[in-house]
Length: 528
Image: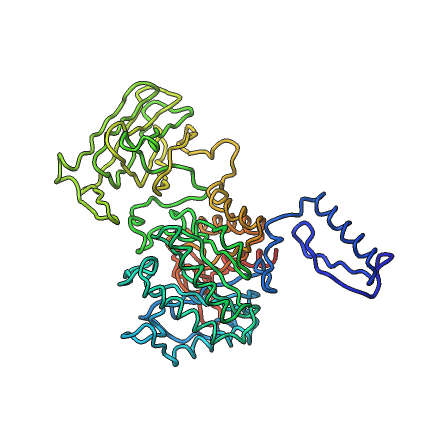
């Protein structure tokens, strides 16, 4: 023991993001000198990291590692939680489960304020399983009165309907009263899964009222709030509340995580993914949207007769595509559903109607000579979207890429190799999409918000080597940030058990098919 420290007081602090126990005698002068030393060391080592803010209500959220259990994910299933899941999760060395729940599982069909005690006792049992096996339980409303991100759409609207909001708050008051005696080390509430399709103002209205209602019933309860827009955007206003964790997601890019997922529209038409993925923006905006209008430009050693193909997935009103090799126009395509209605299918998307090709449609361009640059531009109309960009150099194989088709992004310059590989933007990491997604969450954590990744993972149609490489990059990012995580799911198409992947040599484990490679990867990040 260093000179000057003996029996007295201990304090756990963090230094450079790691726990450090400071011991000192009950001597004021010595105590403050010790704290000054620690402060100086912290400044010298840049210790003010996001991970320093992960302890809330006595819980170190950065240590949460686990899985989602889906027994009450939908009303159609609504089965009791299995103690074996808790036992096995603990046996493997994990410490967290999230219970995404459909409110219709525990309410009467005729009245969303009549709670079914038999089903609530099954949730009680899950909390007890967690206590028995050392697993933190996070209760989540995946479907709530007035909102669910998944179909079918709720008959009311949580964001604008007062009765739906009253019911939502009543449900969480009920849970707060029911579990008032359960410490936050054992139980947290995740208010609503992936809120979206609302304004920031209405989002805050709903969650402020709900947080305050829970804290009236149980001031110490740990509350997890998913970020706005499907967990993408953190909310600084929650910094004003105590015992709040903000939750994000780990599904970016969707072309990796949701490849050929039946609920992800158009994913069956995406090219087979690779990781890392290049940055390609899959929408070309025309003169109708001048703020977003920009050409897709590829620069590099482009050989003569290299074929470029954009597979068209939708057009708004109309568009005119032009391809140029240098300054020379080499291809042009008019897309006008009004002029040729038989070539298009109108598809309702929210309050707008877009038009999808009735038959497969591609815009193809090929330079007749070697060039240093080729560009694609929408020179007339509104917007056009493509869901595959393919490059075929002469004599070489085709390389197909799935672009980012989210709305509102301008094109970025693209570097291309002679063999058709799209290169990362200069000065960026290969996993730059993950860094971009995570940046606002690292920022909010540095301001004092505990952050947790409530769901992540990859559907079972993505090639397994791609899955593991992508997962490793996410895990590395969260390790540096000090964020905990919960895989969707434990058993099932995203999980380590019974995922039905066709390219995995499964191991028999407790009568289930274990993805040992995925488990081994997760175990490497069990401790930060």
